[in-house]
Image (tube, rainbow, N blue to C red; front, side, top):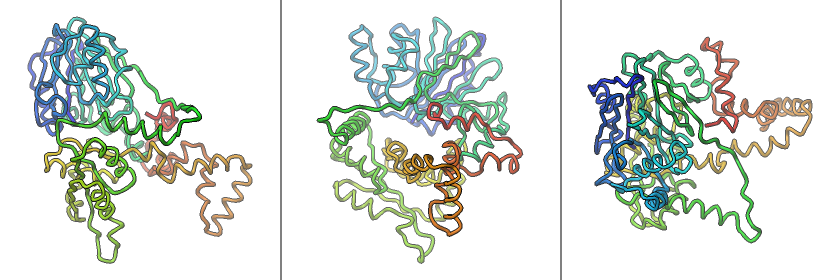
Length: 462
């Protein structure tokens, strides 16, 4: 995790006084305690705070191309960097470092904005073209690395965190009413807006170009589900395992200590098993919580027993921290502050403790199974779609009758029948939301954002 900050003038007259940029970087020092670098030129200021993971010795940023006409700052990691580097070397590019970030720079030099279509990884980066006075920024496909921006009147400001921008006096930091409404609908704020009226986010799968005082934003990638047709002699499970194995292998960190965040569940256990093929000296960390009373079974608050069984099976070092209810409550204000923007996800609590625990053990990279339930339909709600696809074939009158009868006799299934009567975005929202669109105007006196609701459609979900 690193942090980047950029100030670009609309008139090429940005002061060389870097006090503003310095303070922006200071607010993100926790993202990059290992190094700091800046570029100060007419019309542009760029900086980054670095957590050194790849090319620790010579990967300091900004990184420049052969004639210093291009400079890049990046928060991220490029998984196909070696392949791209070899391709660029064959074309005559000269590399100064072994950093994966330098690969992006030469790729942009070679392909311009089309470079993002070739990059596989997680990233938010900015490239300054000195000859053209143009700033190019890009965000990874699914939004792992954040990037926010604001129009300050005379210039644009970009940063990895809201807090790096929200203190600037020119920015309107009043609560965005629609964003506030969306948070109470979805438990997070979707789309381009943020909780602050004057700050926006560069969406995943998008890039931006700033030139001649204007910013132009373009989408370069959209999630389009497609089927893979295997030959008859191929085992689908085996093919899936190969893909997962390749994904884990190319994301291994070899220059710094890393660990698996182990819960003992299927996701983290599977991840550890795949890593164990390549990292025989692996280690795992587990966060467990004390039960609030002796009357409550500990198993409801801790998966420690399962985690220990997995760690013992793979013969790895296993570090455990047990957190009391008082400790969690005391840390809650700091956890909320560190989220940078409101997200009503209870998993942020154990993840925060896990990050702090890993840091105390000098572990720079933690691998987790976060997101696998979404990828492989692990949650129960995803299984409902099979039933819904069958239920919608029944006449609406039948479904209404069945729903009422089941509800009257307090049997299971009334909720599923109710969902079959609603559009998919409505019932999905009902699973994870706090209030319905019809309730919000009464409670908050703010209408729901129908653009945010439409974003639940697959083609606009990211």
